[in-house]
Length: 225
Ligand SMILES: *[C@@H]1O[C@H](CO)[C@@H](O)[C@H](O)[C@H]1NC(C)=O
Ligand SMILES: *[C@@H]1O[C@H](CO)[C@@H](O)[C@H](O)[C@H]1NC(C)=O
Ligand SMILES: *[C@@H]1O[C@H](CO)[C@@H](O)[C@H](O)[C@H]1NC(C)=O
Ligand SMILES: *[C@@H]1O[C@H](CO)[C@@H](O)[C@H](O)[C@H]1NC(C)=O
Ligand SMILES: *[C@@H]1O[C@H](CO)[C@@H](O)[C@H](O)[C@H]1NC(C)=O
Ligand SMILES: *[C@@H]1O[C@H](CO)[C@@H](O)[C@H](O)[C@H]1NC(C)=O
Ligand SMILES: *[C@@H]1O[C@H](CO)[C@@H](O)[C@H](O)[C@H]1NC(C)=O
Ligand SMILES: *[C@@H]1O[C@H](CO)[C@@H](O)[C@H](O)[C@H]1NC(C)=O
Ligand SMILES: *[C@@H]1O[C@H](CO)[C@@H](O)[C@H](O)[C@H]1NC(C)=O
Ligand SMILES: *[C@@H]1O[C@H](CO)[C@@H](O)[C@H](O)[C@H]1NC(C)=O
Picture 1 (cartoon, rainbow, N blue to C red):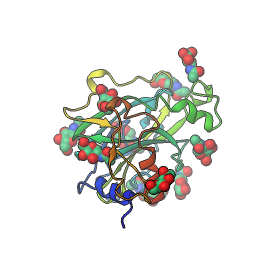
Picture 2 (tube, rainbow, N blue to C red; picture 1 turned 135 degrees about the vertical axis):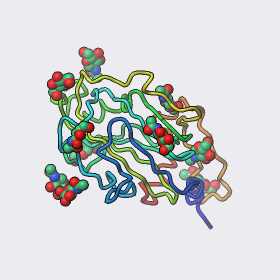
Picture 3 (spheres, rainbow, N blue to C red; picture 1 turned 90 degrees about the vertical axis):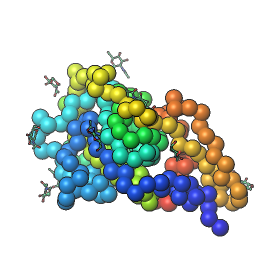
Picture 4 (tube, helix red, strand yellow; picture 1 turned 30 degrees about the vertical axis):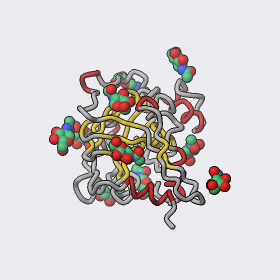
């Protein structure tokens, strides 16, 4: 008997090629050109930016994020690793959500809800800690692909409290593009016939921390994230 978790993963797999572009912050380099490959963890096999001046300046309270998606919907997460050449993307800027629609998707202040806690977990006093000014970091955007495996893109940033958010005309969702909560499925596999989705309330809740936690637990259990 298939567990509902497996059924859920099957439901996620609804397309062949969900490659995407990370437009803001500026990605390390194109991940469409070999030897880069968006399938390769953690940063699509694109090397870290060596020129400090080429890192996008980001406010410590959260910066603008723009992706250009090619898929009608893709589960998406945004993470951060502090430091240079870091491989530990353990600060969750935006918890996993369902990015819907093909085209441009923009969050004006990605990470606003989570950065202060992330800095604290890393030993800073919070987002106003003076040591964060000029600190290097890497933003990682993940979209789940066809088979449940993941696509990656990274952008190298520098935190700078004078950094500006994108202007409104440069931060827009294309028509029909949005982000919604994951439709949770009861992952209690001992309970047959429990596939009724418990649809989360609204798009407004899409980017809140608790969204999709039981689905996420299911994915983690399968080692997919
Ligand atoms: C990436 O870094 C590795 C190791 O330093 C190096 O061998 C490789 O040439 C670099 N790739 C590019 C495209 O610069
Ligand atoms: C830095 O950015 C400039 C302008 O986009 C570009 O010409 C240059 O190649 C970049 N440097 C590196 C090391 O990527
Ligand atoms: C987004 O991707 C589409 C399809 O590849 C392309 O036509 C469009 O120009 C891209 N938009 C931007 C702003 O890069
Ligand atoms: C980055 O990390 C890789 C893998 O740990 C290592 O081989 C490389 O020398 C590091 N590069 C720098 C500039 O520290
Ligand atoms: C992330 O990893 C770094 C380095 O290993 C560690 O110092 C920090 O506490 C971790 N942060 C979280 C939120 O787990
Ligand atoms: C950081 O400093 C700004 C300006 O002084 C203040 O408005 C904000 O509340 C502070 N944030 C935190 C988390 O301490
Ligand atoms: C922050 O950005 C401003 C404007 O680009 C620059 O003058 C300043 O040196 C930066 N601060 C740090 C710590 O990099
Ligand atoms: C794009 O859609 C997401 C999800 O609905 C939303 O949080 C975000 O604010 C939208 N972006 C803009 C610029 O309105
Ligand atoms: C994501 O949204 C699409 C479009 O509304 C929907 O078909 C799909 O089932 C959703 N996926 C999840 C896991 O919520
Ligand atoms: C899972 O479902 C079984 C059968 O309905 C029930 O006995 C059990 O309490 C459920 N477990 C959880 C954690 O909900």
